[in-house]
Image (cartoon, rainbow, N blue to C red; front, side, top):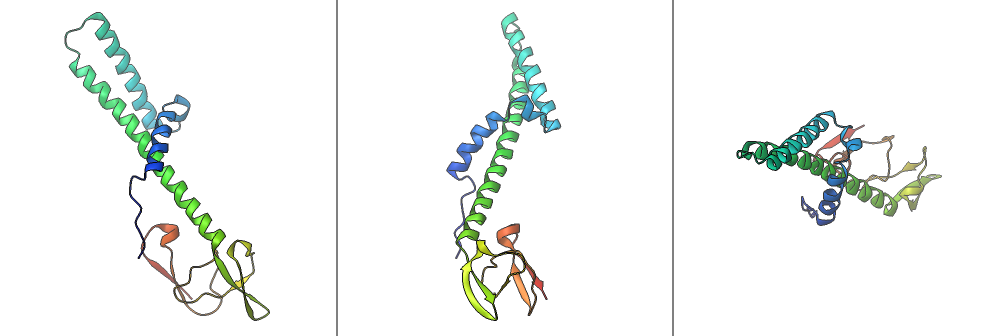
Length: 162
């Protein structure tokens, strides 16, 4: 049974918080035009709120709410984007590690030889049986295969190849 990782893994969340703050840099924000406009709105309403506080305006509640909501939107969007990037990087690292450690059953002159999957080259033939992990990208040249692609796609489905 495969163990599920928590949605908010501590190391990814910590890195995402830092990345969310780094993404407040206008050079980073401009890469996402919608959030860039929201960030500009947050800066403008913040400056208006500060002006109203300094000038002693009695009713600043509405401006305060708008300013807080805009900053919350910008920070949450940056955090969500950083979390997605962090989880993607962690999954890619996990796949790379699996590939380095995997052993392939390579066909050499009609005989099977065990070799590291990372050493496979284009044109190499490998033997795979039911339940085996596929050691690399390729195509089925003989037989029928139903391949679980969930490690790559994240979806729980198989694709049949002939």
